[in-house]
Length: 449
Image (cartoon, rainbow, N blue to C red; front, side):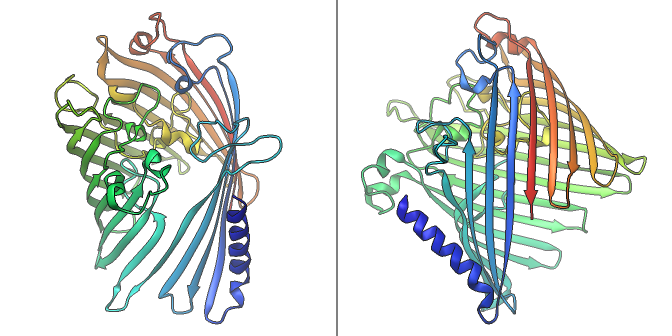
């Protein structure tokens, strides 16, 4: 860790000095987020997920800092981007569950630092219309499949109004093999690699209207990992350490015409999976996601939006795998606060469905821009499971609201609250058959430049 800090300090010093280099322009970007949340209980942290118990209420404080430096030559033919990220959760000790390591102890943040971005992008000399991205980068994939960054190579080319992106990403994710000291060296270690291939085609009809098509394929090796379950509220799927080949085929779009706007996503997920138990045969994956939003603007500063999110749940027991799980999903589309933490960047970890039960969510949001500095919304979420829980589908009814206010040009304060009335399916998930209502109040300060 000491060597990494020395390297990091040296790298930042070089980046700060780079504006003096001839023919190179450097700019810096930053995103500082301070997050507070108080709630009556935290379902993901307990076995009896739907039932409030003594001392379940809690207060959470988290922060994320992202800094990036972009160096570009005068001709804009090549860029280099380097970024760091610090995630801290107050009270998390050395054994904390958060993926980025220990959190905010009194004496400091321990080793809670990671390299967020480190890549170059440049014009391909034999075809200047093609841009190549190499290194640790944002994947730019459909956010209902994968919304994070990865190490790899991506080629982007425009054909008039059509943009085409072709990418390969690599992940060495098996921690037990890493402990052997041989991770990343091939040989038997290659059985643990994740290879992800991505093709995206986007037709830019005009500035506000787009139509997209994509095909993704991932060979997850022998360490599939529970993170692909989209939700840790319910116990992970049985194939958590299995050899998995998964593909996603989808269409997406966005439109705006006069006062009306909206978008859609339709995704088919297929493939094969085999659990770590060698006695189990490979099983087919057959799952779906559908998302549709329709909105209208009125009174110059107001809008209303209605949306539907469907994610297939596990239905057939020992047959095909039917639940949609993806890689890392952006769950902010519904606006949920009580169930899905709209302001928390870690919310994608929990996912917009209830584990293998899937989702059939209907959501409505109405917003208004009070001034140039202040806007707000009220929302409703009718949460349902796709797979019935002991014959019941209704997870609950959530009412939520949010206000965003610009304190300065670059500093925004947000406050949101939500209350979910437990439904029959939520009751069935409780050990005693009586699920507790959820409520959450969250706030965020964000300094972005």
